[in-house]
Length: 610
Image (cartoon, rainbow, N blue to C red; front, side, top):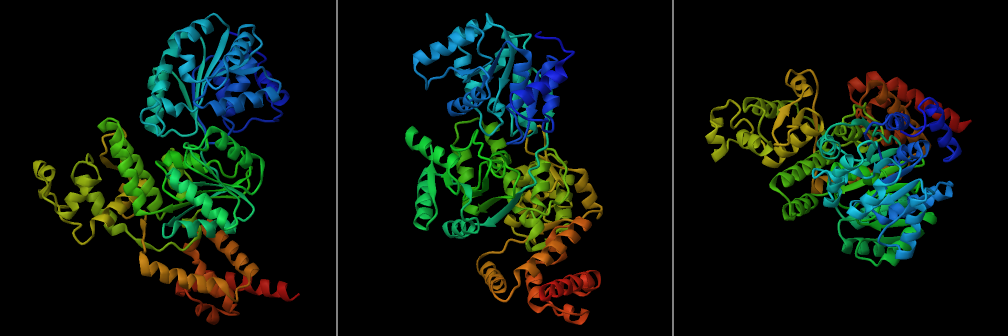
């Protein structure tokens, strides 16, 4: 082992300060480093932008010797090497994009001990020649970046990563760290088993990015919706994700035509064009990058004000990683997604057309269901998103469901019908079978198991199939139902679901408005939004609403909808009788909130006339 452990805490902090210029570790970094410095293997799951690379760069410098970093992308390796060299660290990469001369010179520096960190792609590292050459050197640490690529359950499986499981046998006394920003439970256990044979310390660090406002909008006219959104963020840098190369080109051209500085980025472009556009985005302000998911790994531009999805991403992990590129400077940022039924069809086709095992496809469909549940939920989005990564959270006050008046309805009765069908059939079946029971369908599977004799058989016939599917997704998203962790797709009732069954907790679902109803509501909102509203009074009323909502731990619209606040700001009531006339104020709210809002309006009036 390199160096003594006695002065390690100071050594770690000294390297952090002297080499990287940071006074303190970010949450969790010190724990990861300590485990590595004590010679233990580590799987670190950390949110995008949380300083993952420092978790192995600092120990590499404390330990001395040579550290190997495995990374999936050449561009990513070159950026990291350049950054380390700027910090005065001996770093090199040997990869296919460099000419032979450059690679030979890099290897000479490695062999002579000048290089502290060597970045390699998995294919390059796992050649017999490279492994043999490295085994003769003083290797002190191995780091595997983007480790979710190892897991066949992960959204970015790369077969060449699988070979890395041989490393622990080839370098038996070298600590290995695997880092990733996106790994749900099944991906984590898969990495633990494949890479470490389960002898590993797994550290999952906080996933919350509270500065990013989360919103999802029903897809109507994506070009117009995108333009409206960007006009609200004029002059700011943002990333717009599209599903196809063709759409990427079209959207970028459309934005350019409408006076927005927009660039395209996708794998079908030449390397030079991609690099030129990426450099422009990284160095100039106010540039919008319209891209496929080919753009993003390792993008560390701090002032990205928003990430806009014109199409649904592939999974909740992919979504989390993509929105994580916004607001890295800690300032307010937005993640806005358009969601339509066509997206679901397209994603299902992608999965079915994949050259993968039935089991893999089933898991991919389940991941997609989880993402759809997130899109359709009426709950706080951050609670659902963090819950997926195993974290509990309070309503955030910074997502569309917390802030806006999403039409919602009490779904406790409908939920109990679903829970009963799940319970009576033994908590072993997936949504399709549960819905067949509810709708009274005498399918082969229902009859084979005698489920037509269950009390819940046919209990949901009053509802449409699509409605029941959406409700089940929302129950899963809300943590009332949980998918079978062993991956067979069955639904089980969670503790929260049992509490709902007993009537101890509420369940509201999102009422999807279609076509005319939606246009009518939008028109009413538009009319209400435009004229005669004092913007600063409206802002005052909104902040009072948010405070009251947070005290009560409810979404803001539960106190009053935006339309009610706009009506209030227009009418400026002076007493309770006038306040009762405001659109959306009922008796209970008049009693509970009347005086508070009247006082806020009066104080604003006094301030304005002073």
